[in-house]
Length: 397
Image (cartoon, rainbow, N blue to C red; front, side, top):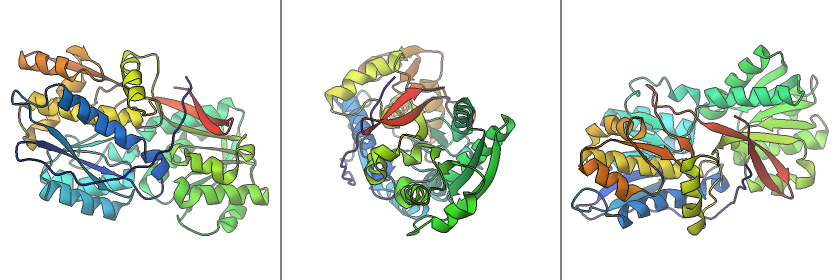
């Protein structure tokens, strides 16, 4: 599989809804450290809502599904403020988002869980989300946990013959979580971690940090958001000659990284991300829908964003009302087998089956979306390298 990450420009808004409309909250990191990564995710959310509304809307009365979008900034404090408004002012039925793990955990613990509102994150992947207290029935995600991605990255490193590595990770929930899984898995597979150091984001220079960890290996595992520390660390590492090979995860996957570092300097860099298997029926149904809307079908977390929104709509349809308290069980019901398979874009089909008392089983654009007891899903991952000035990915697991 090959996919290209296409950066886009997005705006955000708070949607206003008529009294009969059903509102879903959509806190997304429109600004913050990863805007290029998030930009194509926004129209995927909107496209799912468009499909629902074009195919009869919600319930027999045809109520409109409205997306209330706010900027969570990939920041815990901003996310709490944004979701508080969604829950208490917009009176949303459910939350689709946030993007980042720290923001997801903060808003869930402070706002959505106490309010009894389901959160279905489009991309938050920290293993800490799995075991959130009181969150088992109220926190779900449409992308696989880094408990799996960290293992996949370790396997990839070993397969590349990288048998020693220095680790640098940003001090936040997402990057600390995947770094922990990677280090444990990598050492269990026989790799040697020569350094394992946390760094603070948003510093002007990381030359001191690079020098501290750079004496034992030429290889760096970098876990950071590109807009906060990732680009600067990589640039400092190359400038000083401390490291020649880089691996890491999706926080570094943006065109800005290539633009800032230079494609000619990215030949030894490989970063993993959640991905879609293009051979699945779900992706085959999704791809033409995305292309018709000028959305990059295989870009990181873009299909997951569509899936999360579409599943929330299916769950609301299953409930038959905007009752927040019933969404959790309905979400499991529409996502997990048994039931007639529903593919992306098939809202009218799903609506008819549910109206007749039947069961449905959503098979998503990003792959199967069967939730386990913790609200987690399995998933696929890709290894991404720079070719011809852009990121190109291939499925690894």
